[in-house]
Amino acid sequence: MKNMGSNIGSSGRLSTEEINEEEEIPRLDISKFQAREEEIERKKMEVREKVELQLGRAEEETRRLTHIWEELEVLADPLRKDVAIARKKIDMANKELKPLGQSCQKKEKEYKEALEAFNEKNREKAQLVATLMELLTESEKQRMKKLEELNKIMESIR
Image (tube, rainbow, N blue to C red; front, side, top):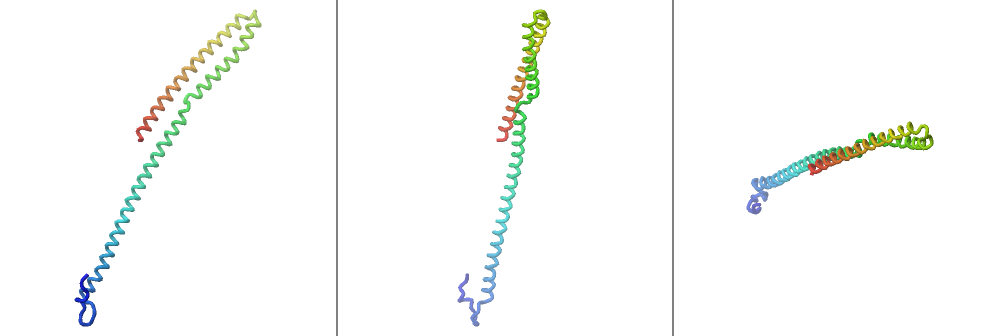
């Protein structure tokens, strides 16, 4: 600011030049303040946009992870139904074998017929056990393959 004593006129008032300069200073302060407020608002909007972008990414990742979780749930045993059917057939065959074996011991006269039925059921059981083993082996292969795929997906997410 200028020395105030040199600008005082004969009437004891400030000169016009001094008044204009004093009005200009608050205007500059106000415009600086407004510029800072605008800068703050602009930065606030930038941060808000970044947060919204991150939230969008997080939601997408959540969807992807949910999908992977669902795949894991399905992976429990894709051939469960087939395995259950095979086991049920094996149980049924076992139940049928027992009375046939007893019948074979009791009835000498019907020995050949009972023995033939007994042997047939044993072959059926062996065939079902072989089928079960194949199903279990295939199930394990499928689950390992799916786990490897899901593991690759999880590694690609990182």
